[in-house]
Length: 214
Image (cartoon, rainbow, N blue to C red; front, side, top):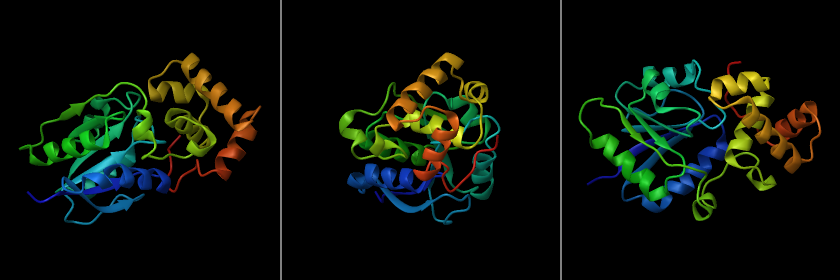
């Protein structure tokens, strides 16, 4: 069986490089043919893995644009529970894979999605943050400074001008949970105010090449 041709999509080049590293040991299953922050990809792609780092599920026009621009490929969302499967499917994705799966599991699921007939939805959940051995293979903005993936995502949303209430409402988390993530993130980066956190985030790539609609 030939490897499934996969495109990796995200707003952050650092995240894309991490996904390439995560899938690299499984080239017998999947072949990464393109990584991009855009929406229109190579025509021979079988599956597009849409990583949601830094994105919000409410009216995600980029995901809709990816689905529209690539009618022959199957779109799979790779995310936390804060970007739930039902929202991904509503936007046109045929699959949803939870972060926390191993690189091998991710590759195997992408093959399953490609081989499935029709457009039946596919969901694979995985609880919690990546395991330590997997986290060393992946990457995200703020990782070198000790931020967890979710702390990095929330700081990225702050850098795009969203309030705590907007982040909570759109990410399906309570306002207290958001505040807890912000407190721990601020402590790790040495920020004591929102303007300081935004400046730090801009300096460390948390704006990304793409954009989040407020």
